[in-house]
Each structure stands twice: as C-alpha cells, then as structure tokens.
Amino acid sequence: MTGSEKREPFALVPLPPMRSRSKPRTTGLTMMMDWGLPIGQQRDWLGLLGPHVDLAKFVVGTARLYDEPYLEEKIALYKEHDVHGFIGGQFLEYVYATQGVAGATPFFEEAKRLGFEAIEVSDNVVPLDAATRQTLIRKAVDCGLEVHGEVGSKSDETSAAVLIEEANQCFDAGANVVLVEGAELLIDGEPNGKLIAGLREGLDASRVIFELIGPWIAGTHHCDVYQLKKFLIEEFGPDVNLANVMPEHVFETEALRVGLSVTGPGQLAQAAE
Image: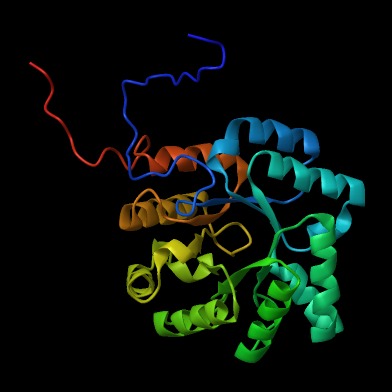
C-alpha cells in the first residue's frame, strides 16, 4: 500500500449506497453556519468536516465586520475544501430596508468582487412581496451569483400551498435552490409532519434545503433540533438537504445520515450461529 492510498477505519461496516459521499454533491447537501469562525478554527474544522460540508453561510450581516483580506482568505479557504460560501439573507434585507432596490445591484457586485458565488434572498425581518423578491433574485443572477431563495416565517405558521407558491416564484426568477425556514417545520417541539408531507408532494426535494431551527428561535432546545433532523432523514432518506448545521454538529449529522446514530440501520440481520 502506498502512502497516497486512502484507508477507512472499520471498512467492514458498509455505508448506505443512498448517501452521496463524493463532492461536488447535487443532493444530500449540508449547509454549515459561520457566525464568525476565526481562520485558524475554520481551517481545523474543515480538516475534519470538509468532506461532509457543501455550503457555508456567512450568517446575517457578519460579512460586513471583517477586514477585507481576512474575509477573502476565509472565502478562499472554503473553496479549497469544495465548500461554497454564501451571504445570509438578512444582510440583503438590511440593504433593501435602508437603500431600497437601488442598493441591491451594488451589493451583489461587491459580493461577487470579494469572491462569493451565491447569496440568499429572504424576508425574515423585512417583508418582501412576490414582485420585489423576484426582482432581487433576477438582479443577483444578472450579477453572476447563484441564488438561494428562502420561504417561510420565523413567527407565523404558513400553509404548504403558500410555501410552494413562494418557492416556485423563486425558481421562476432564477433561484437555484430554496431554503425552507426551520421555524415552520416544528409545532410545539414536534416535527410538522403535515406541512413537510405537503412540501414533499408539491416540490422537487432535490432543490429544497430544509433549515434546522436554533437558539435564535425562542424556546428552542437542542433536543428539538435533533428530533427535526432525525425526522427529515427518516422521511427523505440520507440524501435530504439540510441547512443551519453548526460546525460542532456536522460530524454527528453525517453519522445520523448513514445510520451510525440513533436512526440505526434500516434492517437487522440475524446474528451468525
């Protein structure tokens, strides 16, 4: 065996073939949140997690707070690990609220100049009507950015029909994928099975990324996040697209995807005599 050959521990334990393991992946995406990882920590995390992370969100408006060379180094480091860094939607919401639609194109051009390849268009804090959402998406696409549209509310319950309509508006305007707000996916701490079933019926799951909830949602506990993640993997399989995974939970999320956690194996074999 040469030093360049890759060895995997416990290779006698097969991993499910339904899980896409080679990057770049088109399904089974994991989006990790970056709340301001220092480059040293980012490099350490990616040394372990790189094979299991596809997207990294620069959360809210944190991209504004870095020195420019530092930010560019972070973006480049993600690219080295085939991880696509993108700007979270609340930064664009701030720009729209303070500068209107006229501020969108300069914002997108700046994102592109710095090395970002994608941006999120959401209305978590600043409401957008359908026409404005589509205008922002089209302007981002015109600037050469991929767009991650987001649908759903952090405070109100939205029907599957409305979420599907909003998602299709995003797709029609040129969005590559649509994120579903995590707060919509839980009711009183339990996965919203009815809503999720409706979304599964009305949308192409390969183009939908389901957000996990987090401490920014009042009353959220770690067990709620875990139960939602477990439910989505059981419902859609190991290649479901998941967003808002914290760095410290990426490895555990991959274990959950491949049945090496509490989801367990799909079937039990009889022990050898």
